[in-house]
Image 1 (cartoon, rainbow, N blue to C red):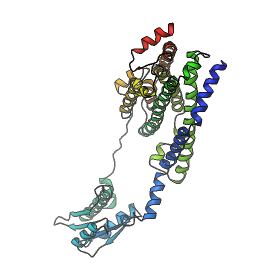
Image 2 (image 1 turned 90 degrees about the horizontal axis):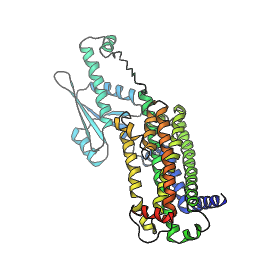
Image 3 (image 1 turned 90 degrees about the vertical axis):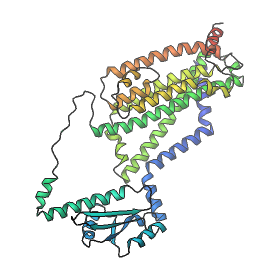
Image 4 (image 1 turned 60 degrees about the vertical axis):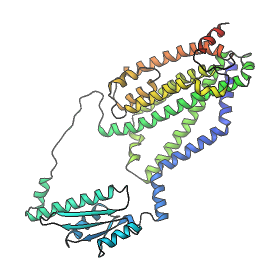
Length: 420
């Protein structure tokens, strides 16, 4: 057991002290804080550069002589930061100012013979969609007011025309959640699912590369003379796995601090969807369980494949089938974000190599009976033990194999060599 802990410590400490680990962790923590405060950063940049000065002012040419005050009242009631200017310039003059960049946009208002508003919005921006939609909605409200006055309707009569119906939606499905719960769960599941995906693929590749590096430098021959190959394999898996858990805890703490601080300054929008106070605790528990099971499943497979190659250059080619399995699981889970009740998701969630992502998606977004995630967890545990038993046999012979090895056919050769 002492040999196991020595290799475990060596795998953990060596990677933890590496500059790449420190730099990657620092960059990710910084990225988390930047992402959490992206709204405040954009506002600060706009204040410094003055990019939003013209966006808060709209020039209006009112050919009707009556629409401007009505539109101004509607717009400023909805958005206090926006002011309307009754321009005395001609349409051609304002169009030249838009082309030269002096103003962002302007609108021309008129009334036809039927007393219907005729509006023309002019802009140079190719992505100006929300602002004209806001103007259009305000003008529609003005049109309604004018029509009501023309028909001599009272305010109560106008409101009765637009009174909403009473519509109640009830879902009798045992797995159903409300729209708000489903949206919030979807965001949180996506974030945690992405963490599981990136962690599994990154740390599994790290194990395969570590084993191949020791083989290529002939260090492996010295190690297995005093430590059994099986003990060496699992020490590597647990050592790098512990390092991965530590790194994820750092990211988690950074994310919690960043989003909590950002939410205290700004409310609404995306930050409300990441409100952990309303999240089901079982979702986090399942995230931890499926991350650990997914890691040990793929890490054992990565160690097995890494033992078959003698050069680090061949590692990526050897673990390509494993990488494709992870990518396939992620794509299937992503397809289910919009509709987690898709039929094929249920079957895919019991396939052990897809379970960490697909079953986590289903259990996070649906109210599944307890037996479903428990069965998938049981299948994964059995698969890990079987893969560990078979991987140990391959690893025992694979670490002694040298020369070009780029095919999965070498697994049979490794098993035979391990028996000898």
